Each structure stands twice: as structure tokens, then as C-alpha cells.
Image (cartoon, rainbow, N blue to C red):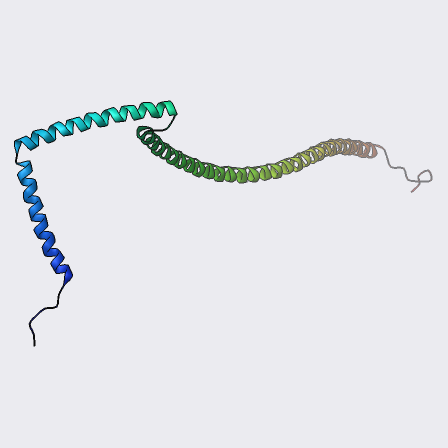
Length: 188
């Protein structure tokens, strides 16, 4: 058997890339370790930043004249959009809370309406009972007045009875005082 491995192109590519990376790193180290390169790159970076700043100012001025939105304008719009979304979400939460409170209050109102209906029903029943009671009271007053009349009449009858008793006792006394006639002139 052979101990040779088959050719792997990825393995070769890996080795070459490692060698190339090492050489580039060494080259960059040599460049960055040089004071003159650092000074030149500093000058170049500063010049580039001034150029970019002037370019940005010119671009904003031109965008203002042409009425074209700039990157800052878009950032402001995005910020305002986010703030608006947050406020809308807050308002939605408030609306949901209000809806919940309205629902609970409507349930309370419904229960109050139900209780009010019961109270009205009881009031009507009490009113009919009051009318009946007034009628019965009027009837009982009529009966009481009739009883008073009957009592008055009974008192009159008792007085008449007493007078009749008195007259009867007087008649009996008179009968006892008169002699009893027996004979032809008496009729029995």
C-alpha cells in the first residue's frame, strides 16, 4: 500500500495564504515602525479629514439649494419616526386602558340599570300596595263611621230600653196601686 496522500488543493491554498499573510504583516510592521511613515500618514489623514469636512459642507449646501435631503436629514427623520412610533405605542396603551375602563364602567352602568329596574319594579309594587292600603283605610274609615252610627243607634236603643223599663216599672207600680176590679165592668 502506498502511504501517499491524495492531492488536496485547499491544503495548498491554506499554506500559501499563511505565507502571504506573514509577509504582509512583516511589511506592515516595517512601515508602521518607521517614524517618517507615521508622520506622513498623520499629515495625509489630517488632509483627508479636512477634505471630507469641506466636501460634507459643500454637499449640505448644495442639497439645501436643490432641496434634497442629506444624511443628517434622514437621520433626523428616522429619529423622529422612532419617537413617533414610541408615542403611538404609548397612546395605544392609553387607548386600551381607556377601553378597559369604559368596558368596566359600562358593566357597572348595566348593573346599576338592572338595580334601577328592580327598584322601579318594587316602587310600582309599593305604589299599588299603597293604593290598596289607602282604599282599605278609606273602607275601614267608612266601616268605623258606620260602626259609630250603629253604636250611637245602640245607645239610643239602650236608652229607649231603659226608658221602657222605667215606664214598665212605673206602669207596674201604678197597676199595683189600682185595685183590681172584678165584676161586670172588667174584661178579661
